[in-house]
Image 1 (cartoon, rainbow, N blue to C red):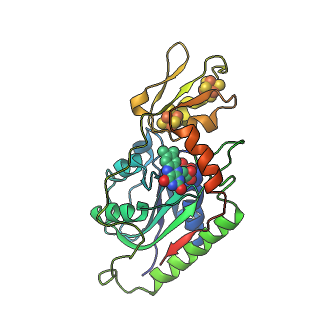
Image 2: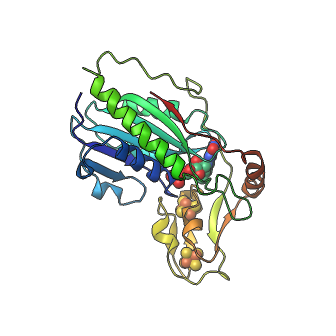
Length: 268
Ligand SMILES: Cc1cc2nc3c(=O)[nH]c(=O)nc-3n(C[C@H](O)[C@H](O)[C@H](O)COP(=O)(O)O)c2cc1C
Ligand code: SF4
Ligand code: SF4
């Protein structure tokens, strides 16, 4: 099968998934003008979506939250119309594990009429990583991006060798199926420490769910906050603080238990 264009879809609050998906796209060798980026991260994402065409290869990428795909990514993907396209599934996780995330992405893709032909789990710097408690600091690095481009090349070769998608067997992926209940991270959200904030406003557009608003200072609607940490990383004054009983301790534990580098896993 010939690839017409590569339609890349990603949800990526702290940009690691975006780097992996676009590296895979580059690796396919498709003309750069035919690499379409559909960024699902920000509230206005529907205004910039480019329709998928029947002969596009689709790549969908999202971060792993509590062993599953970030729920906002699933909700936004569910609103997209696909045309039976071949698809590459990408989960990006913070060097702990991706658990059932690829299974969830496969089930979501199939329900949307996509035909998964390959999948991968890559590592990105953990959203909770800080200077004092680094977790997968600097990932994806050059080696990860090189592996992502290589994977893109393998995907393109596989697709070119296929005559039709009709007899493709289902992708076998690690994880639990049927999917278990989603784990709850517990009550948590991110707030501004007014004594540190200089009201620069950088945190507001960084928020993927519209949780940050301005009213006598930059504040948060707790129910909209997914603790994605994008506002924390956007703030140059360390003024965005996680309000949670569990996460500060979890961060310290992860910095110790996930210190050994994990490598990307590919299923093709
Ligand atoms: C709420 C939440 C839950 C997470 N759960 C996991 C997890 O179960 N396993 C893991 O390895 N990383 C986990 N992470 C880390 C992210 O998967 C990782 O940092 C990823 O690179 C973020 O992607 P992004 O840069 O595209 O936002 C979690 C991050 C957040 C914010
Ligand atoms: S980015 Fe930080 S300093 Fe700037 S407005 Fe937001 S909290 Fe305040
Ligand atoms: S307010 Fe919550 S959802 Fe918005 S960027 Fe910050 S951590 Fe993410």
